[in-house]
Length: 221
Image (cartoon, rainbow, N blue to C red; front, side):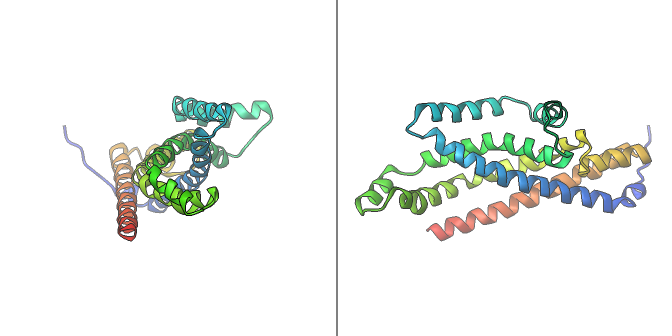
């Protein structure tokens, strides 16, 4: 069996692939920002004195972590209009990805909160710091620094999950790869190029986050 590779039809569509990567990164950035804010609230709620609030937070985490993200995407885009709430496909996907991410980020932040040494909090109380200042000046900086490696892993996974947006015709990288595939029939070349682009982007994101992590560690020391 012989196969003659021909990447010319793929390279001719390079602008589409680049725009797909750009939209994928934008979807991931917006979703990680919203998901992190929600996750932070949920993480603090798990440690709330109120038992019902803590139970609600754990239920949020449990439900969203045990749902496939594709089910959430399809439910929000196709199901919610039946209930009178209709969003465009990009907004719908961002909402789905943000909700899904919030559960994982809540666990990341909760682990970060548990890693804060109680002695530091007691020291803050001993010198008369208010509860809000202890949270702002002691707890949050340590929590964020300890959560950064897991945050980076979540962001890389989130960027890869943006490929699911193609199922509701959001024009990101996988959507354009499928489109070029159907127009050129260069199946192997299209998906090789798309795979390479995903690998390069994820590796670049990992390098950036590791550099940020090292810088924060150096500043802390």
